[in-house]
Image (cartoon, rainbow, N blue to C red; front, side, top):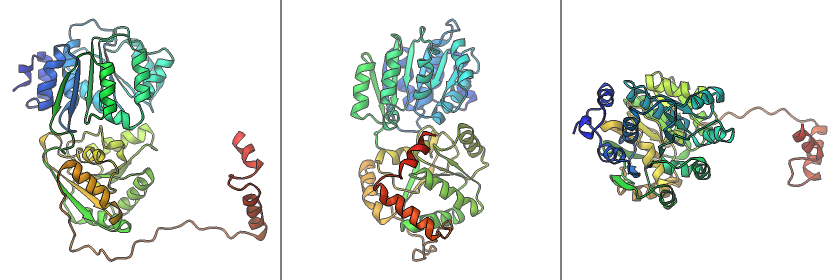
Length: 418
């Protein structure tokens, strides 16, 4: 079915051709007619199935021919990266129209965002925290709002944004349409939908726990202490043009990035400790191919849409099975193929078994014949410590014994006040 068969304006159909969208994906084919009819919608689909265009195309279509100068659609999404991605796709789809889009996210200038809001851009793409900042300052005006879209609703729940979403909705006027898109539908999101949506239609594409088609998966058993060495071995000996590596913590991401860089690979890191500029440079460089490897925390498990990712490697086994599904959904995008590897220590086998039950399949175990699994773990360098004088040792002893269980004595309080 071509896009023009969905009843979209010719300018939008032209944009889909220029973006090389050959035909609607299943979620687009089902969701677009419902949204165009004006009905509320709950849509669940796997990652990488085209959910962004599924709501942007009909929303843009509804805005064509309407007066400019008022915000008529608000899209709320959990992360800056996902908001930026939606903004980019929206600008491309609206290229042949006069619809204006504003991006409202943390880590960027409040002033420029305020000017866009006051100018009445037709679509605002926002993260919850920054949007609330503008609302508290009475800068965000939504008198003409027609459509509210909550994207990646389950991820917003995971990140603790549910109270913020309720505050945002409470400040919005009555609207014609509410759309809720989510990869999964836990009970809390179901209850939220009952409150926000009016007689919604529901669309579900595929099993919620099933990874996207085209992903070849495998588990690599390895001692925890040798995970970095095994990852470096894989990078050296396998054809991996574009690799996304997930770690559980920011510290692990930074350490692993240094180790991969020391091996001569182009690598960038992506996690919450970076500024927005640093995150943008990492993402842009990875998209261009300047970096072969991007090491990221779960920050990137949603909202990272890079078509050429060939391999996704989970350096740690995620505690939540859905996180694994979202991680590996970063490869095999847009009907492509990709590989997903997970490095699993003996202590993580139980978590891996939960993932396998969740996705309904057992991952093949791979042991490399040319990797030394008995090698000694590399020693991490420890910072040198200055020898303490007897007086210093006595002062430290006095500090620890004078106020057991406290960071120190009254001097600690005075330093905190300064």
